[in-house]
Length: 150
Image 1 (cartoon, rainbow, N blue to C red):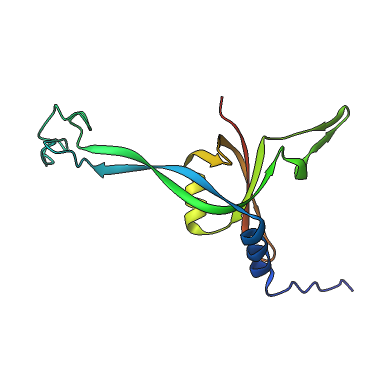
Image 2: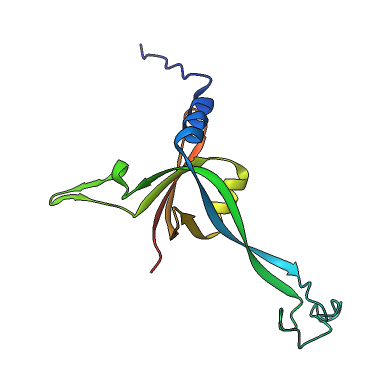
């Protein structure tokens, strides 16, 4: 007879409460594509070429559409030096990244991490190395391993 494990029903609430107390805000740079150029004198969209009617626009270079960065801010539990998840090897421990952030699993956070360019954590700029999904019985948090940008 195998034991039946009963998970607490408020696990997500407890984790969220802890993150809200000890967590700090991080910003995830996400590229937003296809934003219409709003520069004065840019012209309008030519429906045939899908370009601006002013090919000399300084902002969009005549393409009409521009890409911009959007800063997605979320609360995260931050661990520097990846101390919580060291890799044990014959010669000792190896740190697997510069920073580990744990954030709530939401559609907005998942999309931001999937399309992330850079992460701004404690006034440092980092890039994504890997993402690990956690939670029982359902996924409720994401662990993102980051490393300093070269």
